[in-house]
Image: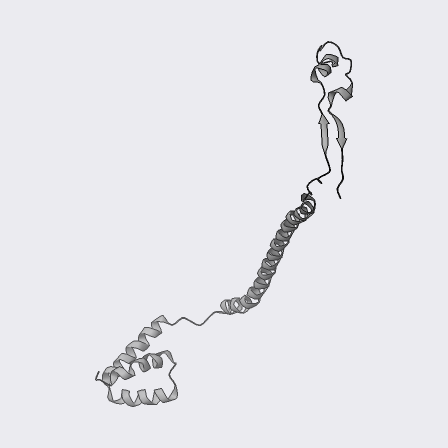
Length: 165
């Protein structure tokens, strides 16, 4: 091969594969007439590609290929519906969780702010005399089951002034 043969190297592969355009074919044919090494290389490339060529597809292969496109489209639509449903389900679960947390928070936030008692309000609790409660209650003597007076068991409220102006 001489120096110009390197320019025709890609054209040899295209000719052997059957992908050479008319202009390239004319230039290559003019070169091949005068160049024995390029003719030999073209024959070698055509031989290598013929060994790699596949036989024509059978009728079963053609039917499988023609049926593959509708099956792929059907499967894609099914997958798309499932993904869309899963996304909507996740969105619904997230919205439910936000709602379940937000509603009580909003409701309790309204009632959580209790104003401080007014300056005039006062509540005084009188604690009962525990010795007197113990003396009359049935706890002093477990054998007796008479009931103690309930008013002695609890503290009595003396005064409550709810003046919330």
